[in-house]
Length: 92
Image (cartoon, rainbow, N blue to C red; front, side):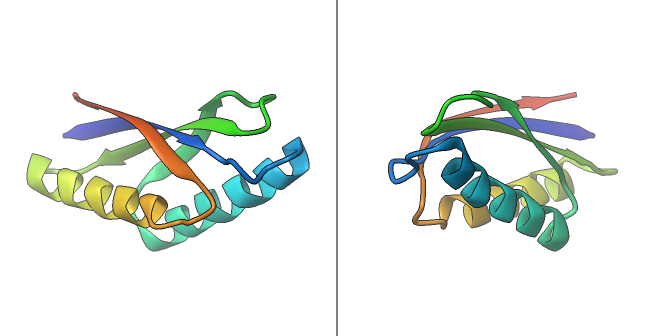
């Protein structure tokens, strides 16, 4: 089972691409280290205060893949530096 999630965040305190990338890279690195997911920024690379990231988890069962993705999403949502705008989820 493959679970694919896109999450869009707004980073209101970022006033440059450098500030945005500092927040984004820290969260991407920590998410990869803590959870069994792949993570990448997929949109808004040149926009200061927005980002869209994709998370993918591959597992033998839908329940375990969902659990891992949900834990990663909860971790990402807990960051006070950004606000979640949208979540899209798909299963393959």
